[in-house]
Length: 353
Image (cartoon, rainbow, N blue to C red):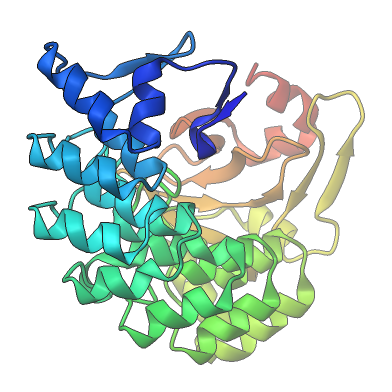
């Protein structure tokens, strides 16, 4: 069995692959003289293929890397740029070499991963400072990797990013976090109070909301973590939890008096035994979450909707009806008036199917 690190394990590989990963330069010279294209991917197994330079970098074989580069291998391949492979799998000698030969330090691979993310994926934490020192700076490029690192709970890594000036409130959307959370929101979603406190101590803003209006306090309420909710509440401006201020905020939503009275009450949890949704729990009035769907204002009313985490019950002031917002598909489904919804919650929810 041939093990090629995280590329996989194979019962056998072409002889050319063995020569590359073992640095057999004489065999590589012979192959080149026989017409071998050093940029052509090599098939390994049934479904995988890798370029010769990619294999040399992954297996940390500097002699093969140097030989391939000297013979014209593409250092800045769009799918797998050499700098990203070097910082993910290699040591400083290999990283310095590919940079000296023209590797683009700001390159992204086919899934928009940058050098900081690549080093984290490979657990090559010692390469983080090197990446920064080479000019791919934490201030300009480190936010995405920093946010991704929150869930790993590696405080030394986080300290590196913070020390070097990362935007601690970075919240640009990407394929992992399309809903624009800050690192603090991510920590709150993982119910990690220790991490939340660490981020706040280093300047994280507790008031920045995600795309759908959720802020760290709202997330804690959604997760039913009252210790975390109380922690964030004590850090937020007092007006966030003032009833009159909330009523002023909700005026544009033109809520029916019956809905306001209901949300101010104590009975906000309902079991739905004859429904696929199982149960529904509403947010207290003060904790309802305004957000925008396109240009349209909506008010999130539900704390949870059984096991359907991607569905939210909302108030739509445009239609003056209860609706269901599908987070995953970003779609709004109109349901009914508030009194009709309360009369037959299960039936109205089942209509979604």
